[in-house]
Amino acid sequence: MNLDSISDQLDSISSFILYLVLFVTPLLFIPLLADIFDLPKQTFFLIATLVSATCYLLQYLGSKKLSLTRSVFDLPIIFLPAVAIASAFLSTNKFAALGADPIIFLASAGLFFLLVQKVTSEKGLLLATRILLWSAAMLGYWSIIQIVYIFIGAQIAIPSVLAPFFYSSFC
Image (cartoon, rainbow, N blue to C red):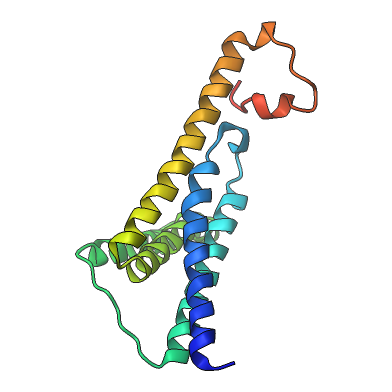
């Protein structure tokens, strides 16, 4: 295999992971998954961002050309994790403070920079927007189903296998 085909495969993997993150992230906020511990959500978000960034960096190491797209939002996006990390180091409980928001802010900043680098055409932007909107629409439909079940569900017989999918954790 030559370096160009490997670079193309890494580009496809990186793009697929980014679009998967765009699709799955809104769906992680359904009431069924609302719990005290956000660790599964954070873990998915962080691992997906790290794998996509690794594929992106390996792709450009193989092609031996690195071009970075700049955005007007780069500086504010860099400041957000920096302030969160500084706040965590200045807090009284450093271990607990470093494990919460700074990790999510770093992963979010990494995802932002990867999206800016990968989505450079109008076609890619439309695809990313459609994926995000489809995911949000699915989340909206799921929420409507749960609200209808909360108010009318007492009169409807739901099979016991499906019942956990209709209960929200805040009821």
